Length: 613
Picture 1: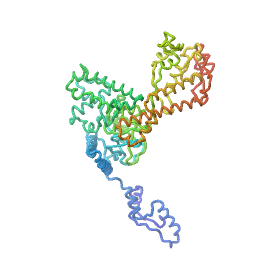
Picture 2: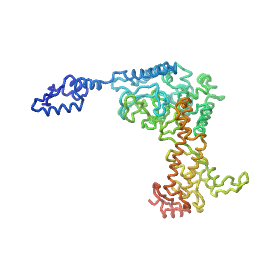
Picture 3: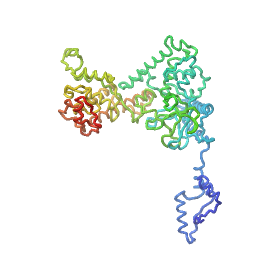
Picture 4: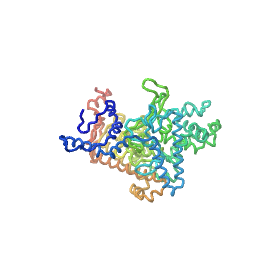
């Protein structure tokens, strides 16, 4: 066989090894290739072959072959972790002038990380080595003691980085359920004589176990390597742990009401389960000592639960809440498609009966890139309340806007159904003749008279439209027909729809007026980076959050105003339904589905079935 001027006559066995890229590089690198002599009769053909070699791999000299060999040699086990440790310690050393404890803090976290990995390997047979094992590929991730938000440069605590390039759908981790904290593990740890009953809420049960492991058992706890990597409350900072001064920076935001509600609920649950007379701290002081089961520790436990617990779906006994060691170090991205879930261990033929938590890569990752999962489609308000951070770019961000029948009917004068004058006896009030029927309708469909709806940057929920279409019905729409005769998933009439959209704008503008500062003022504070960094973490988060809420609400108003124009709802003397239940399709409006015909409407009036399939 002839391979032009570069014929290499090799044994068949050696030739077969060319199937391996690395072997091919090693074999060929043993030869020194030089350009063919031009005196050959086929010199032009030979020179073309050499040109192809140059284009494929450079000059073809020792330097290029050595470089190719290095790139394909593979990584020495431990190299990545050593590099990462050196980077962290170098960064800590640079910061030591500002924070003398920076280096010791990094060393402490590195030590805790190592102990967690050892514990997972020894107690759960979890393979976390960066070297290949028997039937195991090198583990693709490593723990970083410090990660930062790429847009705000704020710390986001520990995280998991890719040790090497990771392929889409690659298995990233497997953690046995026996190493997780669940309701079952809590009842086992504190379940003498069913102290924690089978009906106990999962969050309450795991909170009790967290306090038991960290503050009662301490170093004697089986879970101590995991407990020691859990952060303190001030490293997470969910809003339900903020001071009153920090919460004031969120004035006007719906987050304050949600935070206060959460604080009251946590205190009530604490008293009802542990602290009140006749509860666990009093009836079982050995298992629930008061000096350890304090409200402060209760808040720490729920900070861990809200920010780290995972809802696992595919388990034998249905869904379960779990705290999963190592896996809960992965940070959140709203763009990630990766979710943790559980499965039964074993292969497709033989199952062991045990369960494990598994995660697959939703996309490819480069070496040193942080790996993310999704905590779910959560708004910034939810993230700030439960996780202590908000995102600059969040496709699921929304702001709750309050719509109340009392406010809406009050605008038309329904303030007092017993009198046609208000409390000051100044101006007569026109009572909505459909007021009582609307209230009865809401009661029948289990709707409150005051409802919070989420508004997004360019859209709003259809439930909000349906609610307001009912609220904006007039006698000109009904013409003595019952409110229950109309389909509120459709546009009732042009005039009704215009009233609906304008009422949404009014509700959003009312929400914006609750903020003591404008979006422009908040933006100016953030722009002054020197002064902004002097504020506390909570204050910085609050200013960013309220600025983004105002920005979102303004965009929603702009989207509504555009809809009003494109659908012709800014005209005068718009049509009413006049008793027709057909609904209308307005200009620029998307198809609302199968439109009712006149025949169907006639059948409906006669009390006959209207489904004409």
